[in-house]
Length: 261
Image (cartoon, rainbow, N blue to C red; front, side):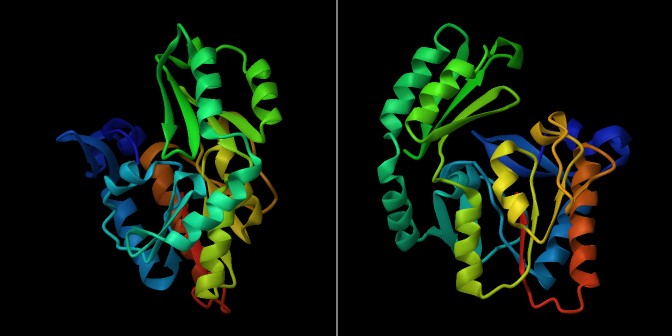
């Protein structure tokens, strides 16, 4: 998902884009029509699990035209089943986080760190914390913050204008593992573009990342990770096409989990 211009990419007006998110009555995010067609096709042949760092409320604003049985929000903090948070998973996450510093402590730390330059400092669903800068160039060096955060069992990462403080026990892949356990899926394909996606990408049998975003800026890759040729909406189309090709090429495919982030 992206702005209309980013979704269209280099082809500009020649690409048909569709609104996929509305916020406060106004369009917020778009995808190309071809992306949505490919996602629907993928949903027909595999278990598609949307995975996001977005909060539960932010995830629910998005309509990609499919109704997945499972979805993961808040970086693995919520496991949705038929659109509703699973209470058993919530209890598991709560138990996992008991050894980490509480979100209130990290929120206070983030507020001190962000004083004078940040636009927003928030706790996301009482699971992790994020800071939004007016401009990414406003973000100071993260070394001191990282040391303080790691002492509490948390990690720090930056994605564009956002700085994330996340408990190390809270990962997307742990929730994906639970989906695989429940569905009995054997093969995992994954897609993602941020540092918070790395555990999920590394755990996958095959993965794809776009030629934009945090991982692209870091030049991150792995032997089983494919990088799209283009950025923007074209990257989304290429990413989904690569996942579909992988499903079709595997004659042993049994409906394994496909995880676009």
